[in-house]
Image 1 (spheres, rainbow, N blue to C red):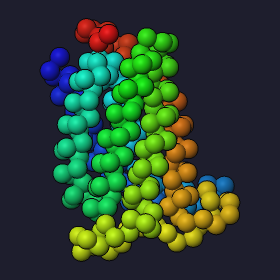
Image 2: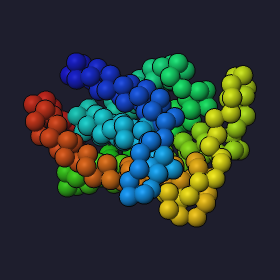
Image 3: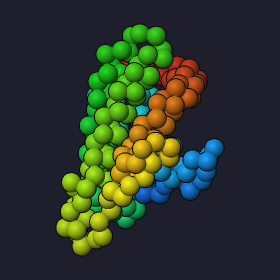
Length: 211
């Protein structure tokens, strides 16, 4: 049990630290004439895995220990993000992470006795929406541009204009990135149901599962 708990903590740390770094880099590619850099950062593809780790921890250990996984992952990831990202990214990521993951745990626990796909699906969708709002509001919005300046660093906001999702009306780039990020989270919430069920069926059935 302890070994699996430590694996969950390590997985959470790895996912969040990697996402803190990758969220700074727009996807430099074209798709159907659309510049994906106006829509997505690479962090959009890694961060949703954190919800998978949280949901599996919740299923295996219960909500109390799942919160410990989140807290432990958060503490180490924030320290790592100091070296991997700007202070503004670290603060935004940490705030969004804690609030969204705790909400995910609460929703998952309320639905845990339903069909196997309902807890991870609905908890991830709702929590992902909140996570996107908090993260991009703090990390990219001009209202919080002074955070990096307090640490003697260049402003990291992405407030210059860009077409919404690469094809719509002009908005601030961070708004397009936020919408693209959330759409990716919606897709991955569905795709990650398969690994969730696989791990749940093949691994967690070998150990007592929390009620």
